[in-house]
Image (cartoon, rainbow, N blue to C red; front, side, top):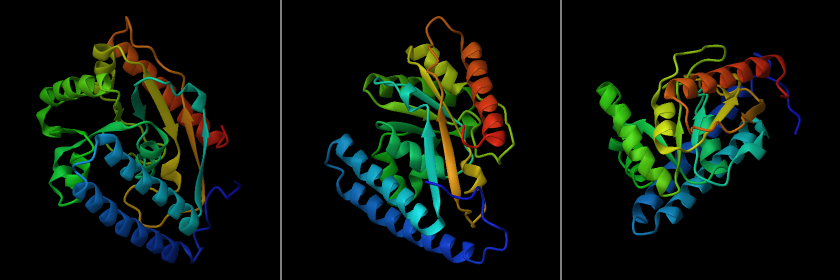
Length: 251
């Protein structure tokens, strides 16, 4: 589907479109979170399917209201076995996309998110890896311990190595958690780059229409590799791809 790269700054429809999307997302979040909590007795995969329906609805609603679509390249690199996803984090958008596009995943999240009524309770039923970010080395150990357990059960693990959302063009230090988990588990890393922050920026209510481009990179094998080597390779691939996305958005 074709769409402009961004909308003109004077587009007066941005506010009502963004408001309409937000209302739909809030309503769907409340409904689906309540359903997941009420369906606690279902299997994990059944509960997770409800969450995927929520993600698909919101990606569709985003396209209808804010005219934001997406294109994917490199999907052939997605393996048929559990992997560790290490992705650029610019927006809320990629959490919706990865949740519905990939097999069931475990998110590495702040434990405080689990304290929110219904939303946090529902998230807890989807088997995330909830960490205390202030715990330092013990948080990394928790990611390794729980991550290995999830991977052995067939649940993929998603890690944003920069730890927080960053603006387009910004680069933060890549944490070692994902690379250490890969080295310990023997599972491959699937790197992901995208430019969602150009259309749904962090901390900005208005969303600009366009096409988000998502690139899945070649699998990075973890056997006989040090965490430092893995982390460097992931960072180089993601950041190089981000630069190419900036000059060639149809990469």
